[in-house]
Length: 148
Image 1 (cartoon, rainbow, N blue to C red):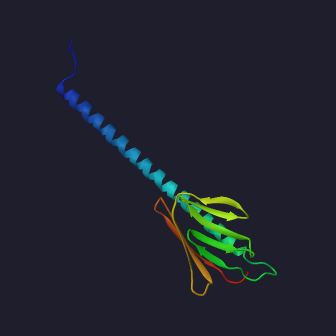
Image 2 (image 1 turned 30 degrees about the vertical axis):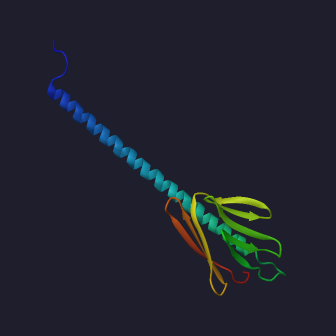
Image 3 (image 1 turned 120 degrees about the horizontal axis):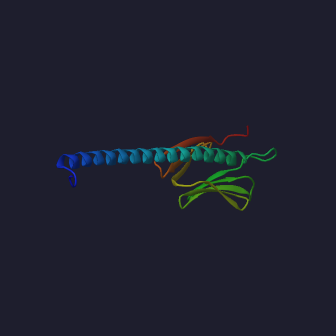
């Protein structure tokens, strides 16, 4: 009866174990990349919905008997007046984009690294850019013209 393994059996076992470790590491790396891509795609869907909500806030500036209300850039966002005292304010605070309307704040989207708004010189369009911490970025041009 022999005790233990031969050198050839030990080498074969270590090669097999190394192969299993490499395969496991490759699978974990692949799953990690898939999760990051899925998270980035989810952020992009949320960003598109947030841009649509900003468009709705801008559209509320029109009334049947009211003139067109102004849109003003603020230090950390955008303010859209619905009347002389009522307005919707979109602002970025600590990586979270909020919309404040009638003294109620709602979260539009989190994990935002940049929120930039620009109004053209004719005051007919506003360009809104959202950048996420995931590296994705969306830009949308929103009309500021007359009511539809």
